[in-house]
Amino acid sequence: MPPALPWSELAIGLKEEDADLLLETFKAFKISKSDQAQCTVCNDPSPHNMRKRILLCACHQCQLAMPYARCLWRGKRLQCGRHNVVDVFQTGTY
Image (cartoon, rainbow, N blue to C red):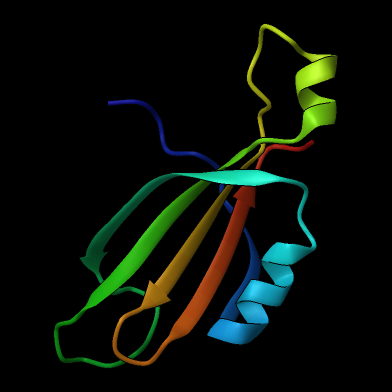
């Protein structure tokens, strides 16, 4: 199993609209993985799911700078399915 990535928190407990505004400020990205998991975003004790999305850099400048390598930046968006609370994380740099 690969080692865990050192995720840094960008925003915790945002509303869905605010999280979308934050993601619009990022460079171009694509969603590489999207799945559901047990919720770790909110404090609701009853079991429910969250949507987990992994974001990869799709920036044209990064592709020109490193044509045969992948940009090290990754993002992670966790959204509670019950309360629509969103956490946003990132690792790596552009």
